[in-house]
Image (cartoon, rainbow, N blue to C red; front, side):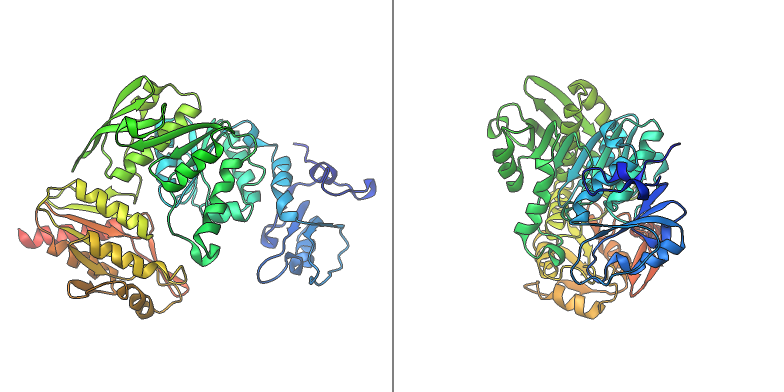
Length: 495
């Protein structure tokens, strides 16, 4: 394979003299990954500039360096050529796309953004479409061979590298989660998205974005992406309706919702006659003059919304309505997303809900799956070193929508669990019916012990995660395994 030259990668970005032009065998912004023939990318970070690692990169085999302009940067002398690029971060997606052969130009690319539901939508699509890979929170690649992910959306160089690897496997479609951080930091620049999907928008990541408006602005970038063929929008969401009004003339809009046909614009994708049971969801789906029956073994009204989002994306990719419905009827629950654990007289569910809106959606959804006289019990906590403002809000949600609440630890990280708990407890109107149990395993056992036949129990916050982050260590911990062990223990005691 003939590697591209530096001048090809930097064409129309910065001039490369013929005497300094050279073939580039790899590209990275992590000095630890530099090898012979590498182009080292030095970006301006929040703590330090990447040029601090210039000599390390040179020693390890880098043949050139491109770096972001910074008036405060300490100049570093190297024997290899350096090229200063103003706003390098904005050009890096183009450079990475060129290096990896523009894989997203060939692949059918679906970008999925929103506060909640991104993983579920992408995994429903991957289950329903042959040769559809995912890139997101749980991993990347085909579902039966997922590679572990470190971020919902990797850095922009890794994104294009991953797309090249996916293309080389002969895969045709990619359902990619696109986080607000990724959009704000340019991690998906250079990617040719065909379809953009919105799940919903509610409070999250305000430790980073500071305001809900800034958070929404970051999400909105995806729906003005050059080259989009269609956008799929949740019309049950205020932000989705706002976007529909803004971009209706720019792109094909597929709106979706749950309710009465007359409440939505003509041609929307609507679920009517919905029924929720302990076994799943049944609904009639209408799309213009077409109608189909959706019967799935997943739980939750919000998951019905996620299924509609996946269906809208599939239709936008050219899959027929009947084929798409037939394939979606086969999907299973996504790991740690409204996942029913065990076959028991108690409906025990593990979910990743870790925002006020997600917790509200899950609790309200579970209520629809049980009898009116059943109790709804909930275990939840809040992560350390994250948006503290949502902690009392989650308490208010739990108190309003659950009959029994146990508050526990959920990845305290380097923050004091007691301090986190204090923030949460401040949101309760009354703490008389609230139990505080820092040990998460004990909290799960306690809540299941209290549950009676016909009740529903929600263990919220960690979902698919396999560890509890305490200080700088990750302690093995899996909510799903903990629920199974607790149920077995309780059944054994009752025998």
